[in-house]
Length: 283
Ligand SMILES: Nc1ncnc2c1ncn2[C@@H]1O[C@H](COP(=O)(O)OP(=O)(O)OP(=O)(O)O)[C@@H](O)[C@H]1O
Image (cartoon, rainbow, N blue to C red; front, side, top):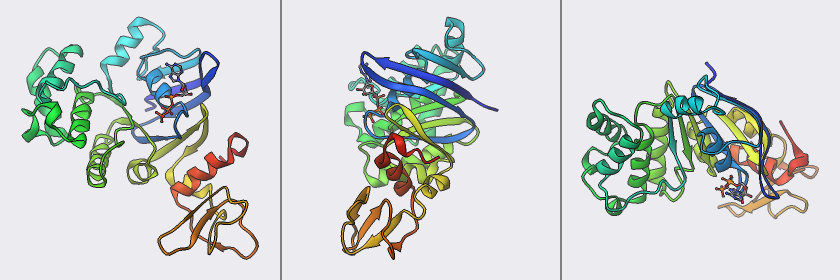
């Protein structure tokens, strides 16, 4: 079943166009929302979480229309949202923070059992009595994730949850997200193409408020097929190029004649789209 359908969403902040004619649908599983700084990711997530309305366009979330108060309430009851800055109360313990969110979510029956359940789901059984300020960044993100899972939401929206985590924490967090995506819809906003490669079955690339790509991760890599090559120097005219560990340069763009083509990855496809700019719509 389609969990969410957005049609022609647009939103401006003064003279800044944050979103322009954004149309997509979400189903079960993890969808990655990739885009550079300022692409409009957080704005789009906030609209979907019913925190702000779009200027124009239509949105249907879990069968409800967020334009009316009753629709918004119905959506919020079945939604888990982890914002970029969850506003942790540093002096609360992990349990107290999640319990506080459970109160705000109006969970009445078995509230403490539900708090324990979500803390267990994110692997924080042993840490639940610790103060937020004493937890590592990765643990803190888990507390935020636990709060987002209260009430077993059908739709979970995660705004850049892997930012600032070390590689091992990021791996563990990805595993958790993959588990959460089984049987429910998860939208994961991220700058990390590795997040998308490891957990997402579907990916949306947003740039300058517009959708530049929608499809599976293999198709995103395919955007750069025939456009990635290696050579001894940074190629003139490459859209992006960087030196690799063995001293060769990895180039993306229009390859010169006789170039040594390489298999593209998700990062190559993503960079092709972003570097080519709005005119270079490739999917
Ligand atoms: N409340 C606001 N008032 C004014 N401009 C805003 C506001 N929120 C966002 N913007 C602008 O809208 C555009 C999109 O911002 P948004 O935060 O949605 O991007 P983002 O993709 O989430 O970026 P990042 O990856 O840096 O978090 C940016 O140009 C931003 O400056």
